[in-house]
Structures are given as C-alpha cells and as structure tokens.
Amino acid sequence: MARRTGRRPGNPATREAILEAARAVFGQRGYDGSTIRAIASAADVDPALVHHYFGSKEQLFLAAMQAPADPRKLLPMVLTGDRAGLGERLVRTFLSVWDSPAGTAGIALLRSAVSNEWTARLLREFLTVHVLRRIFDHLDVDPVEVPLRGSLVASQLIGLAVMRHVVRLEPIASADPDALVTPIAPTIQRYLTGPLSELPG
Amino acid sequence: MARRTGRRPGNPATREAILEAARAVFGQRGYDGSTIRAIASAADVDPALVHHYFGSKEQLFLAAMQAPADPRKLLPMVLTGDRAGLGERLVRTFLSVWDSPAGTAGIALLRSAVSNEWTARLLREFLTVHVLRRIFDHLDVDPVEVPLRGSLVASQLIGLAVMRHVVRLEPIASADPDALVTPIAPTIQRYLTGPLSELPG
Image (cartoon, rainbow over all chains, first blue to last red; front, side, top):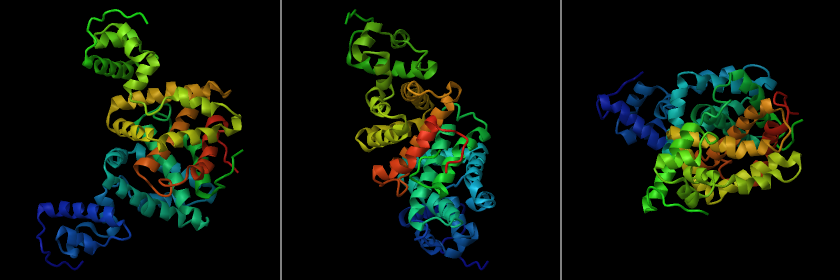
C-alpha cells in the first residue's frame, strides 16, 4: 500500500481520532454517502493513513461502530443452502453469535443504541447496508417489499436478543438454541420470502 | 378505608420511600412473592398507609415500575372477540399504546431495563404476571407451552417497539399501524395458539 506522510503523524491518538471522525461522518451521511476521504478530512489526516490503519471503508465502519461480528464472514453460512432453510440458518447463526463472546459486544451496542442517537444511526446503517441488503441480494422477492421485509426480520431478531440477553425473560433466556430456532425460523422465513399478509396454517 | 397512624407520618418523601421499597421487594421476590406488608416494612411505614397511597398490590407495582400503560384497561380490548383475531388485536393495541404519549414512558422503561438489572426484573414480572398470564388464562393451549409461547410473543412485540421507536429503522419507524399489523399479526397468532414448529404456507 502506498503510504504518504499524513498531515498528522501516526501518534497513538490518531487511530481513535479517525474512529471518532468515522462515527460522525457515517452517522451524518449514512454509509453509502460517506467516503474515506471525507472521514480523513474530518480527522485531519491523510486518506492513506486511514487505509493503512483500517483497510476498506467497510472495515472502518465495522471498527467505528464496534460491530460485534463481521457479516462478511457470517452471511455466507446463512446464504449457502436451500431457500426454504434460510430462516432457520439465519436464526441459528444469529443465536450462535449472541451466545458467543461477541454477544457481550452486541449487548454493549444495544445499550448504546438505546440511549444514544448516533449509535442508533450506525446500527441502522449496519443492519440495512451490511446485513439485510446482502441477504436480499440473494433473494428474488419484489424489490418494493424488501425494506419492510428487512425491518420485520430485524424486529424479530433484535427482540429475540433483547429478551434472551437483556430482559432475560424465561424460557427464552436459558433455552437451548434449537428450542428457539424451531418456533422462530418460520417467522423469519415468512418475513424473508413468504406471503406477508397471510395467516399461517 | 381504615387508616391508622403509620410509624412514619405522611410526609412528602413517604410516597417515594414506599415506591423505592416496592421496587426493591418486587425485584427481589417477584410479584407473586411480594406482599404489601413486606413492602411497608421495608419502607418503615404502616401497611395501611401503602393501601391509602396506592390501593392494591397491582396498582403499587404499576406505579413502582412506572408502567407506561395499565394492562387491566387494555387487555379486555385484546381478549374480547374471536380467537382467530387475537394476534391482530394484540399487535394493534400494542402499537396504539406505543404511538400514544404512553410510548415515551415505554421508551424510558426500555432504556432503563437495558442498563439496569432491577428494572429488567420488574419488566419481566410485568410481562409475565400482568400481561402474558392474563392473555393465556383466556386460551386453551397446552400449559407446558405457555411460558415459551409467552416469551416468543414478547420477543416480537419488544423487537417491534425497539425498531419503531428506538433504533427507528425504516419503514417500520414511520409505517402506518395497519401496514405493520398485517404482517406481524400472523406471527403473534401463531406464537399464541398455532403450531410452533410448522412452516407457514
């Protein structure tokens, strides 16, 4: 990677300054509207330094929002396989992340999003751009319905995380993942690909 | 109501002292295990004073947890009508409470529950004893399944409130209630009374 001398040298505070600038710019302009250049400018460093520290815009975003997990690594597990099993694989993967050490970061992120509008904005971008868009790119559902379907999926999964890890309502709090995948997977499957207005059997 | 002279006179701080004692006792022993007598004792006042200020144990509980709405007033609207429309009426009533001024109190309660274990405990008691138990008392589902069904209902509804009012993910954040009742009612209906492990059409 070509590395120029930034306006500000690589002192220990630079990394944090870039992350702060990234949170502000991503929060204000959204992920798609933000550039490494604009973030570097806001942090008063050279863009090459941002690339040097964080690699891509996506990696910078995930670092800035302290994402508990990297959707690029997890979503292939969800998207590989038959379409009818998508809901099941998504719920199972979601539960396994939240039940792992990453879950602690997830709870911290939820806490922050609930009390801080900037974190809420970053969480919206994370869900929309980095998780839901990638899932629906693999599905042939009516594009008009995609935003609603995506936010319905998010509502059930976030509610599951809140009940299992924050409010800790039993039996969801201590249930074996399988005992939750079974009833929740059909909900997610319907939100993803099923008829939205039809009463299931 | 017979009113005796409490050990502590009715000074302006007494009401708050009773509420604090109630939060501690309800949080520690749960709603069913708590008595007005124990709360009065913890607040160092006469039980009659607690009744005088708050009426019933349930009213005291709702005041202590700053419940955004009174399930005794709302649930009849949900429970009156045909069984097949239960999910729809529950989602519609839930949305109307959260879209009303009471929603602000609901958001405050969620914020507190996310960062404070005591509020989370009170919220669990509220959901379990005051909302879900009352709903399932009207339904003839297998009693063994009731706790799971109840916590599934809570997970979808809380997730809906979080997405609509806290994270504010679109289109859930601004959608007309009807546009949300239509896709979510079948989920709630299945969690309440439907087959938990079956894929809907």
